[in-house]
Image (cartoon, rainbow, N blue to C red; front, top):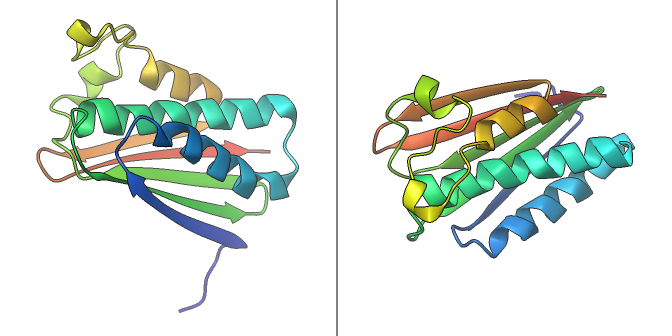
Length: 141
């Protein structure tokens, strides 16, 4: 099967808060080949942070699990997918509302999806309760 992407990467790591910074840096290194501006790179790193944090805090509820990131580059398009096999999102529309959080006791701001949507050109969220969550982000140069 022929690869339609110019480059691609896959990354897996434990669902620990300390690995959120690792994910940001790894994705930034992959994206560097597109020669993004400092602002574009900061936007991408922030969106990755939010998606990974959602997987850790909400998907695995700070328990054990694996977070996966798949990145692809085609032309000036960056596609990032962040996966977890956590508990799932019951109501994606509700979760994407500004200031909504399912974890108010953890003093979460409820801005994760809003931040991702403002920093990336496109975002898609798929979830199956108890099976898998997928957050796809796209950024064009």
